Length: 114
Length: 113
Image 1 (cartoon, one colour):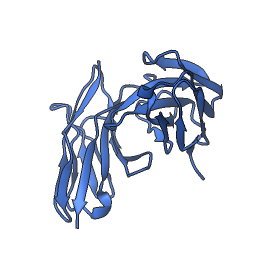
Image 2 (cartoon, chains in turn orange, brown; image 1 turned 45 degrees about the vertical axis):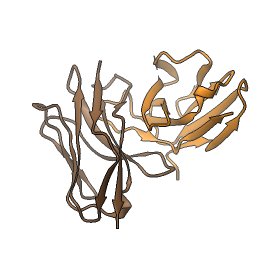
Image 3 (cartoon, chains in turn purple, cyan; image 1 turned 90 degrees about the vertical axis):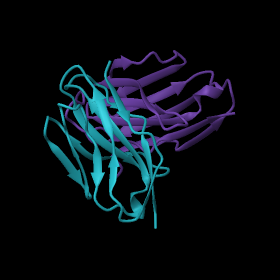
Image 4 (tube, helix red, strand yellow; image 1 turned 90 degrees about the horizontal axis):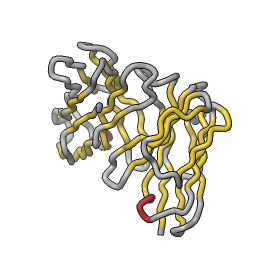
């Protein structure tokens, strides 16, 4: 029974298109995150949400719009895709706020923009 | 701001060799420290963690001790296996309510049979 699941696992699309990645967690956590992993494996936080409310937006271009319909779901919509958006995107969740608590990660979505 | 610095990889070892991956951190408060592992094509999994100074986290033969005086959390394993080949990430999270985990750049480990 997958704890944090993302779909799709792979996404290949053309520049200028709009795409969405979905994320769901069944751990009962209040906080969810989106991270971007670049080609050198560097992981950078993009957004964090707590109980459906945006807490952190790490200067991400406004082409990226997260949406949290409920605390178990955090989707990522990307408009006007650019070549530089190619990366692996990870969804994660944790009990409220993180701190001492462990974050659980999804399998990742490999986005390739051509 | 807070940051995590890891040793550059890749690290290549023979099976049964001793492993150390260095990790140091900068934080304003008293963070919790984590090691995550990423196997090829997979997401990150928690390997171990420590939440206060002098705590030792351990799992699957891996250990790391939270050293506040040296702001370090080095990962060690006495005898690596081929199946340990992966990318290892050191991370920190400040107190509850910070809503952020900060990761190091990752260290790729390759273990040869």
